[in-house]
Image (cartoon, rainbow, N blue to C red; front, top):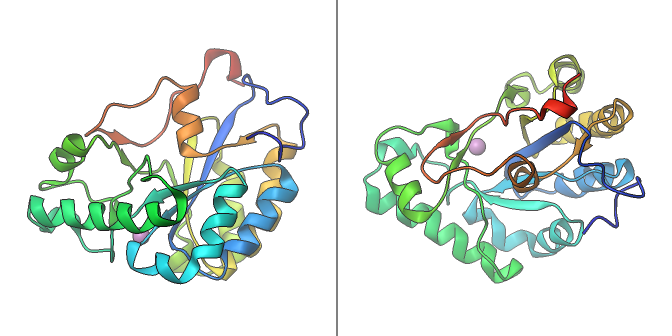
Length: 219
Ligand code: NI
């Protein structure tokens, strides 16, 4: 799974960053994937179940590239306002449709809007999922500005960060500059599951915001 890396051997001691792209799949994902591949990095795509069917070949490419697919609900409701049964349905239906293309249910869920109130955390705990949030919010959906998205990440990124972006064209263009710049600074661009595995994992039903840096990787 490391064959796409530019580096000969993945260096466990390097600082790590998890780039994440929400609300896809979209036609912009292939551009993001191409930029990641050129930089020798990977990322995580948190998808809406209702959009998955139309993007089967994109999903296959994401998996072939060693990137990760996460569950972002079926159609992006405020899960904290739904009864437990409907939260289970939002996550379960999305797992089912993603599994049809990937052969397995996603290992991770990110609740829409990062809302973890109401029955969200109890249901996630019961289903075995932490709630994957983020430590850097680029606000790309709001600014729709490539330079701003790039600047937020390059100014703030540090070891263990989970960076929130969206599968948008302006963001894909930012990633073409961001990914190589982060790699030049010595970061490994990893999936959220890789970040978790390297930093001791995460209990279901808890909120994942940022992983603590390894002492050896501290700058
Ligand atoms: Ni979203």
